[in-house]
Length: 383
Image (cartoon, rainbow, N blue to C red; front, side, top):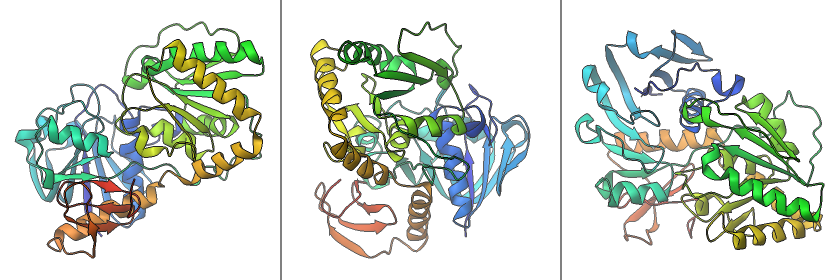
């Protein structure tokens, strides 16, 4: 359908196409590989040019080392930097021929080289990031686009047998800086009431390309470190709750979305993109206030203790949570639908007026998009 190149000049991590499934890697790399696979599944011819050690293929996706690339020729060029120097300017050293150029960003940290590489659109993973790139980065409103990241499908892989969920098991997935200390204190409060509460910790400093640091887990805590999807998937299905209490705002939150898809009930700070992913009391819970304050942690502990005593309500929350995140196949169709609209001079069936800027919205596979300000919503009436 389209020839697509995802170009990422980041050099802080070396990876292959199979890395997310085998040993795990940060959300930026994971999203890049998952989108490429989904676009290939939608009929596109896809190539990733990135810091890979050798030319190889992941299914029908071609992966090419940065060193061996001198030119880029495609219908759609997606420029993406999610770590290291956050600098896209190395693409200026290449002979580039593309009908459409998009810069795909992962968070609110400003990407260098944005002004010089040339772009038709900056694609953000959330309305939260869309506002930042407009108000802080100065990206014009008509050049902003929001497309959420996706989750693997199915949430329960075919290779996985029967998995029993433990309602007292908490899971933390991410860099320790985001909120591990608060999660450990939450566990202490919970275990003071019921010793059945336990915590599994996945991730660690290597998610950000840093050296692993020693961690002596306290009683009730299992430290797993950075693992692949084949290890993480069953752990998510066994867990009762995903703890996402943090002071660092996520531009999207792949770890949260994957936990929800697996049926975990999330307790997440009301910051960043999390309010776009969670409908409070329907598929998870948004927690206001300082994530590490004694008052906040006491409220969350009381909530979790009440929830484990209400299995029917938990089952309702888990069903809703598992249906909330978009699968990558839908996300890919949204990207392709936007390209089709772009190449057909913007013609697409219109919708109601955007509540933010008043422009007539258009529909893609994932929901409603505004060409005036870039605002995205899953449904016609709201987020």
